[in-house]
Length: 159
Image: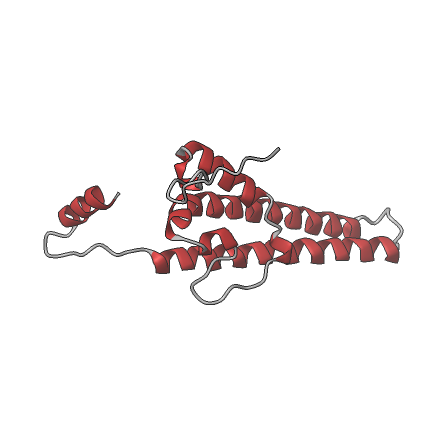
């Protein structure tokens, strides 16, 4: 049997994400970031980020941007190592005179190099684009002849 007691619309029972403690929100952002498939990401419009979450509101951007850029940087660095390793393996294969040249193996190595190179450059470009967008969104502190003193005061007030 269901209750027909009306609920007061002024009383919200929904839990908003910003009602959660910051530590939990950071865990949510980290999960969202780690499950983002960068290989299917399309180039965003000017002033937008690859990660859709960062384009939703300033609070998400302020809280999750550092996590996102760190994640991208780590992926880029890992992809660079994999690319360089594949390149070295191919060079060693070609330099090995005791090895009889096998075109199929060579083509597989070249395909691995091409694939890992594409992943590396994709991540590098994504990191550069989102870092640039982050710089574009940054608010510049007003400055005068006092320079750094005013900047420090501004940071105290705005952070």
